[in-house]
Length: 555
Ligand SMILES: [Fe+2]
Image 1 (tube, rainbow, N blue to C red):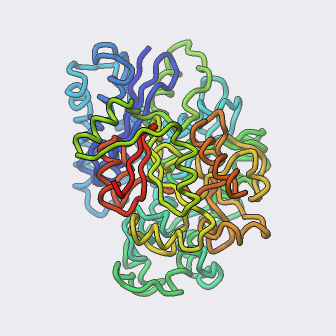
Image 2: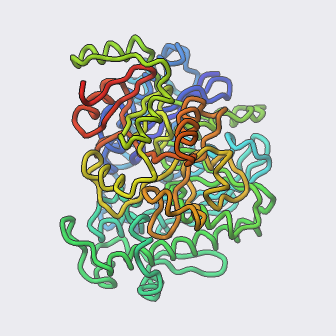
């Protein structure tokens, strides 16, 4: 059975294809249409489907539209209608418009595949899709599942239980109790975009979480067994009443702003830990799966590992809305009568497009550049990094999820104190307070960072681990203000070529890690060789390796 999964309801539009329960391919629409997050999160666009991503999925698998048995959409309009409360939005027309556009999803899907789907179109509840994206690939059985995001149909946080092929909802925390929305509003209050939770998370390390703890308790009220959110926080005036005027985007970041971020991080940590304890009591067991946009918060994730009785944790590489494309498809597969749980698949971020040498050379030629073929790109790139160069590393299948994990990455020397400034100034054009992350050889990670018990999710850059005190000085470019690093473990089996590169860097320098940041400059991460070449030419990247084809800035 061939099932296309689609996320398009709010943002992070994405498509995935599962064949007989196996995740074959998944990718985000933003990588094709070059619009960050694919589209604006407006009520008027749930029917705007990730058309390019979906077509790519079919092409990748060699399938035609007529081969598709089901399309699974990660939002359920009927559930929304049943659970929506008029008092949620001040403007009642908004909800009417949202439902009306959701009604067009069926036609949009028919246009996508060139035929009417009828009952083959499945609407999967949003948090069920999130939960499925973590539970089925995890391989855990049974598992307690925690979903925390902005909002699904009504639920903002959901506790679930997975067993065999079945996922059951245990409890939901509905609107307005949305931690995701608090982060969006706080990001705007701090002068960033609603999508800039990662910036706020980075800023939090500079602030004092105690300074505004009392004030923030009015926004997120944490109790022993849960939390509540005051919806006044969703109105800009609500936050201004508590914390003073919003910061203008161009204004200086003051200690006060850092303290707001720190208080938000602390309150979020406490709320999620309270949810976790509730999940321990209601479901229990050894295995925990986590998804939802809030699961991109590596500080909270790390605390979850330390503060819970669950001994195993799995968070997918795309815990945010894009991942619901995979989750919806897997949930639809398992909902079929008599379906047994498919063997775990999709627990790899490398699910996107790849390009062979012919395609790379064609792109190089079209750009009018002169390529050089190297014998082996990995050691050559490692040597260039050790010599202080910034290297574009474009290899194999593109990552699914917001982090570049060694296939669409910019790599640099973690030992140089000036690496951060050089990257920010020449290429990334981003704020100096934001940290850069390391990719470390899995077999040496414990020697450099306080890594907890093993988890596959250590390979997705989802946890912030303390660096060992005697190591910090040697790798200043990847250590954040609070002494942590958002580590990616690299196993040879998971990414042999990337592992080779870091191994060579280790052999030369005695440091088993490189700085890894996403291959982009304020745009979506590069997808094709042409995107990579354009970013290479437009910025201060010293060398670009695509497969074994190398371009250097002198050329
Ligand atoms: Fe979501």
